[in-house]
Length: 218
Image (cartoon, rainbow, N blue to C red; front, side, top):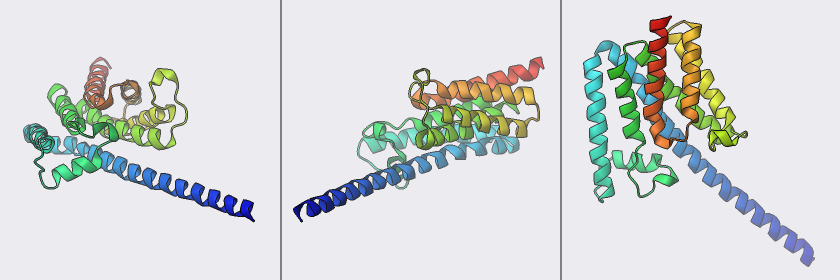
């Protein structure tokens, strides 16, 4: 009788631990989805730039500067309605109590692509940032199993998803298999670097350069 009670109590504890873990995972999933939704919004930049490049550049500069000011206010204890709440909701554990750099480097990455490269190189660079890096993070975090040392904690599955997404998007922008492959390989290599939020700067800059160079030499 006592053994049965002990087994039941052990089962209940295990179930409680499992449910608690599921709740943590669900909360983490919501945070990651929110982060990537913000990440994907940067993909609007090429369409806006097609209408007015100067307006889009100005908007990215103003948005990045405004966010920086609001984030500094948040850290000093002054919360800005909506923005500060979204920042807290989309922050990872490593960002708690720190300046959240992701939106800054995201805006600057798209801005650099537009300033440095003409279309379609700038468009491909920004789409690689929005979708390639975004899907690599989601797939790697929730489905990644193979994590060799040379990827510095990142997964093979995430890197491959980055390659496939950028390949498809690049070919849609510019139907040239060679350039699409160059963009996808470059994005995959940039995404694999252990740069944390700064990959938002590196990826569009390198992808834009390689695509522009390939287009000039093709």
